[in-house]
Image (cartoon, rainbow, N blue to C red; front, side):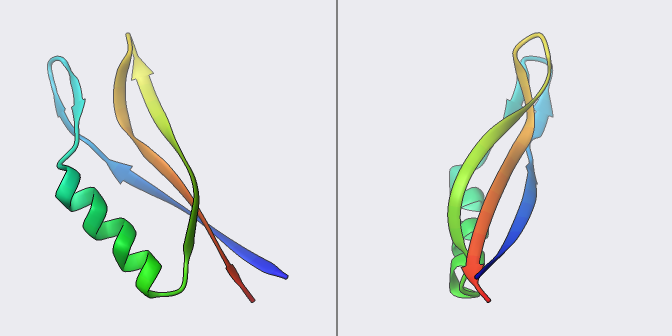
Length: 63
């Protein structure tokens, strides 16, 4: 049996769209991994005109 978690990772917005600090994203994902969460998928959250507002990360772990 599994339990699931979804997490929004916000981008730092600019005129040209969202930007991410790779190290900050890695650190956040690794924090969930240390708590036993396995990353299953990541999708972009678009805010229009091709710019990214954030990432939606899906995790699972055994109950």
